[in-house]
Length: 326
Image 1 (cartoon, rainbow, N blue to C red):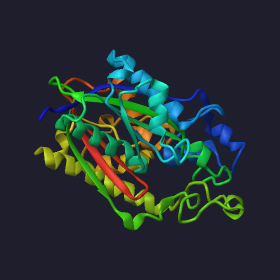
Image 2 (image 1 turned 30 degrees about the vertical axis):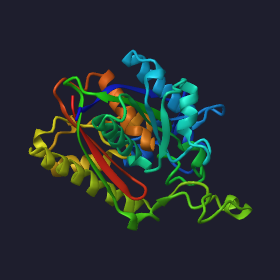
Image 3 (image 1 turned 90 degrees about the vertical axis):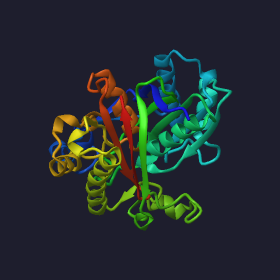
Image 4 (image 1 turned 45 degrees about the vertical axis):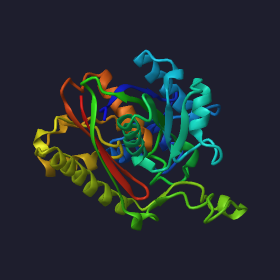
């Protein structure tokens, strides 16, 4: 079977920037409180005329341009998001139309912050089995539309954006070596948007109670993230037959610098082996890993031959990782 590789990457961040100082005027918080507890200084917020698919299409266009490809060459489009334009139809179909990729099949994935890794694994499988030659995978979120801006424990954490990768047959570089995909459904209730689905349809009461916004059990989610980040890196190394110290770079889901600090200390890795950009963007959920990867490439953080682990974790609870040899 052909091996799968990353052909190109792309990203898009909305123009509007919301700083911690802006949030000080909106909710009972301070720049110092946010920075010292999360590492976040600012985040991007989508414009009123932007929907989730718009961000995804712009990230996809960036990836296509870098690959020198036309959208007609795409065989499949996979969009990872839990903030879709609408619940029916899928955002991926809208992305297809915006790109003009009329030869591509389309579907969405709902695996929250791990969604992009799940999508990347499916894309790699399509390439390896010969079912597709080029697959566009996009992580895209407009979480600002699903935040309770009176809840200082959640509204300071999230931002909007989209990141993309085009996956195709390997030419000896940038290979997707392995994937770890896991979940723990017993934590289903720890991070959620309570209303709007079949379990609790929209009513005047659910709107009044702000039940269409993100609710999170912060302490439990933090513990989950620390444990799973460490486990994913250890497991990725084990499956490659190496020690964690032989991993060159880690580009994790961007959520909290303290989570990364904890994993770094326990694994014997150095802080400079981790790429973090959450100070500028906050937690963009499924978009965070592809945005970070594209930026890491642009900044020269990733070098030829690097063994890179991309770990993610989030609502569901889901967690997983991709292993890349660049």
